[in-house]
Image (tube, rainbow, N blue to C red; front, side, top):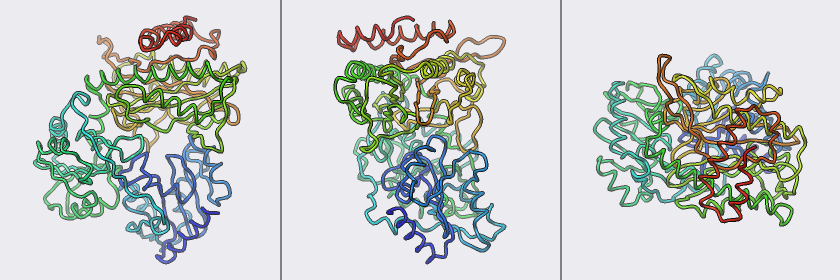
Length: 597
């Protein structure tokens, strides 16, 4: 009932303002994938808690668009809400644009908060609806009018990430950005994405749970720099570092007025996929704009040697935490009460014991039995299963450390499983191994290699409705563009670039059988150079994740010899790297779980 009431209240305000349809996306003012509580308007209006989705409310109906990761979850959470689920990418399902083109009457008005819709999307909608003479109203955050106890904007302090971790100073990074600006003949560059700003300024913070970023905007000139941020978040160490480049600190919200005052001689570089519609429309139409990707996106994706060394360190610690957890789980399930939620807390406890740990890198997915068929399942008090000594338990988790960001998934057999489930598990492991072993010529993209991971599953007539892997930030967002693995290019996902040396990507094939079970095995891999010869520069991967892959669930008979050899070699590495940090009982257990098969 609460959701219906909220939608009715929204419709009343829409009527007052003569708005026929109103869009509520998942993003904040910075097009972030994960957002702080203040920005969870889509969740507030729909009750759907997934990280991705868009709600459209018209005077007559309401719909939610989300992707394959969330179909099962969305169906459950939208029950009795009168909000229709639109399964993105499925046959005969209209996109948000197609839906609006169909539903909007001539001469009507479309509304959205221009701060939470990117320029490209706003312009696309305006263009598509032009033939109906639909006007765009982007100056109102209508959700704010009905969200009485809305959260405040976050105010956690920021911290400086020293060059012993980042491997390059703010000044060095700034000069690289300015070089690209000069190449493009730009005099001003507007950056609004939080991870790009955090990377460039070597600042981290706590404004988005699990994503150590600071709410901010940046305007880079050839001779000046402006940072729009709540000044109270910056300590003296940060201010001293920024003063080396004469950074001018301005109030967070003042960017909107600031861009109105830009000199008309400026040439502004900006990314219309990132800069919000309100900022773009506040820039004088007389100012020349160069639309292009932020240079920082590629810079931060290619990790330097110091970052890579730190990443390796953080993964050893993370592997120790996960191995201790797996030992504890295997030895206690059925003897003490363990639930999805208590297992999550136990794993976090093991991580908190590790040096330089900050926080989890995302909300842990701890999913028992059929819950694991929901790719992004999140246990709550109502859904919280008790674990028993049978079936599979999927745990997808990670940590933010001062020396790296981790993301690891293991599916653990808690007791007897069927032959079919064992076949599924082994096929997932085989896919993960095949991609890990890939050797390829420079110039390949993720979609050239994705079939290696999917092949064993496609042989069974099975697929998974998501990519095989995503880029990972350095003490930053756990999902980072522009590298990834996916079997085809998806227009709105920037994850199909050429794989460059130093890029870190996850390798995580899976099986998701609704109502039955889910399996995912995930390691992080780093692109590196192999030999160079008359055929070109060959590349391969270094695996940086170390934790056992559950041999209890492996059917050796369906594996190829080279896959078995790889698994045995990988497990030898796991034992060598992780065992020095374990007690004697854990070491004995790990020896058994990394044995040759």
